[in-house]
Image (cartoon, rainbow, N blue to C red):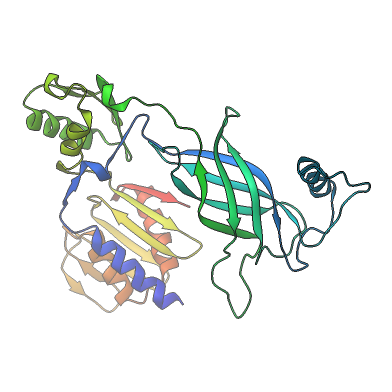
Length: 334
């Protein structure tokens, strides 16, 4: 297992040494107001093969109310193992229109052991305001089986299982200005985007406010015609920039490095490992491995792995180098 993790480490660290590539603004930015919105509802799944809740206050009350709406008036409390109480969630897409179909996720909230084979009854899906934006219903799909059993049989989906009933009015094409936001805040990238957009539009229409925010004034020739403008902007490309950072997942031993990580002259001693960077002489001795002054982090990793270092050794060495000040970059653990 350790050997596999070391191989992954080398792969990811090698990526950090590649030259920066141009990236479309479509992949870097979001537009204020153009976003998906979560909607949620409570419903009942019927038709289960004895794997439902089998009772419970919420499920029984829901069954009674359902029958009352259908014109029936049960004399006693209803209970069935073929019914399950569920929470239904979905995302209302930006510019979602009435009649549009969206996917829904169904999760059991009772004692049901499986939702396989069930059908969701009509369920209103509401936003945080309480307004109903979609109606969900249909046969459930719980995906593939693992040795005959679903890994999580109490969660299911209905592809295109909800129909949008209400729209969010954005009047996007009438906007006089737009606020753009960088998904990964960075001052250098924001400045480059500002310059690129202004050069493309032939004027000072875009202004970077901070590392995340750019305000765009709609040019006169694009008033009430914002869609073609956004089609131009989102296909513009810039060289992105990022902080020198090492992200470490201690649970798996995976290490991902990005940016231009520098190493100062330093001597490393960790267990049976001894490495000198920028010290006297180059090459290796019996007890000390020498590396040249301009050694990169990728070179160091390769050398340490060649000396038999594990992913745990690398994590410990990186953390100590950072604390010593010999590693110029951030370290983030998760």
